[in-house]
Image (cartoon, rainbow, N blue to C red):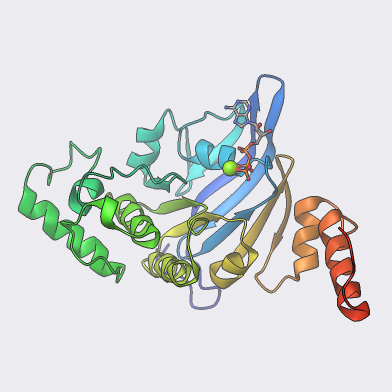
Length: 273
Ligand SMILES: Nc1ncnc2c1ncn2[C@@H]1O[C@H](COP(=O)(O)OP(=O)(O)OP(=O)(O)O)[C@@H](O)[C@H]1O
Ligand SMILES: [Mg+2]
């Protein structure tokens, strides 16, 4: 088995597999019977409405939540994640939506934050070299690794958070809404970054509400609805197919609104709300 993406499908070996994963919080079923496969060298977008279970699924994969039932395999072997550190040790890294960077520390310190056991730790020169190497591999635009995070733009912060997640050479990286707070140019930069991570042979799972961003980088689009799988799509899927799977119906508020807008542009401006 090769770790390199196959030339035909563009994706490599199965890295992470979920089968029948459920997660209950008391009486709330946040996830029911979820199946998911992540392959080396592919970007999978995880989409769904608010409350669909996306963050819960990411937290299960990050070892934050233990599933109520179901099985997880990593590189073909069944695994149980007992906590976030066991996910990290296995090679599953997560960039949470809040990024968890320290404003008053520089880029190097942030990349090594929480890695006190790293062989580099406390060797400032080695840490700086490693930080530069990680950022260069991503072709990241960070002016100086000694700049404090407080002076960086939103896109640069996302870049630092992604570089930090790559420190331990993971096989899988999960990104929760990586472009949510970013403008057009910064979004494009982060999407480029995601493509570079994929080119390194990692499996990328990206949560996003932005269908444009999803289409731009995803190889597959996995839809969750009410905590259940509700379809897998290619980026060529139409908006109405995707919206239908996300909302559970083609005749829904979003498509009705789009219809109405289309009608309005034909009949001219309409007064009132
Ligand atoms: N710690 C928790 N305790 C109880 N219920 C929870 C907990 N975490 C999530 N839930 C519930 O599980 C369901 C799925 O929530 P989750 O946060 O995974 O959705 P999401 O798809 O990430 O939504 P959003 O797009 O709003 O971030 C919701 O009904 C939520 O209220
Ligand atoms: Mg969420």
